[in-house]
Image 1 (cartoon, helix red, strand yellow):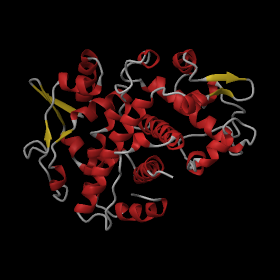
Image 2 (cartoon, one colour):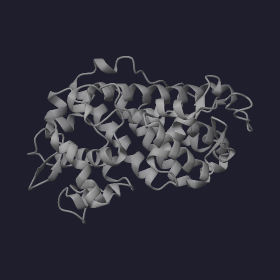
Image 3 (cartoon, one colour):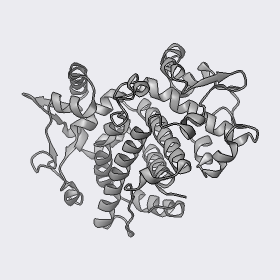
Image 4 (cartoon, helix red, strand yellow):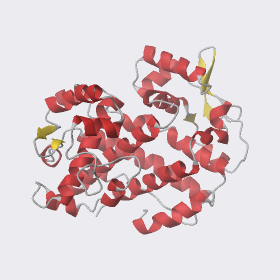
Length: 348
């Protein structure tokens, strides 16, 4: 299990990896990305069903920001409901309030807004104010977001502490994440990229008490918030990232090829081609929408199509694909991932 004390050492090891190996690791992580936004585990309960099997980025991003901003307000205000509960979680508050991509408003670092308004949320999610206003409606309708004069929009923690709303989905996604990241860590150790073996135990996540479940819930929304901001700075939008993720169908022997400097991904069977139906099935994006997104990605030289088979291009499988992200961004993404792993999967 990774602890806070391990993060600096792991970062140092991974920073020293050649770019081609970093590239392969990120492709392997990206192949699971689409799963991290699905609501299929909880889908069926009437309230949860209203949001669909895949909650869209524009619907989820404002909620995630409101939740995190409410966490910070509660942490710094002794009279706030659940203040003591939030303190006991030992959340990485400094990571939240000092992150370069998000500006939370209930701290001394904030100068722009006095409370969590539509303007504040729009500023931090980079969506138009009217889009934010419209996307908040389903959350307001089920009381997952409330509003008062002092805080503006806020998340009522009693929903998380006292109900099971989206609980199955949160556990299902956390288990998916844990397995994905555990496989990466195992591969890194097996290939001598890490001197120590780390694992993530997801088998007993559902046995965690309320406090630890709440921590999982917070860190999921932190992950989602960061993803949307990183995507916002990339050449692909959210749905394009999900389709690209579903197009990266790796076989189980991929890690045996990790040390190879040059891999012919399809010729050697490292990645298998997919089709529109398989992408739609795995991403839960309607097939006609998938067809349009695939065509968009073909025009951007991300995907190519041969008859009914869809492949990622050499532009994606080549380490130069990472040129779209500078070294500082890649380091920040790695650091963020390690922080999430430590705080989501380590029981107190």
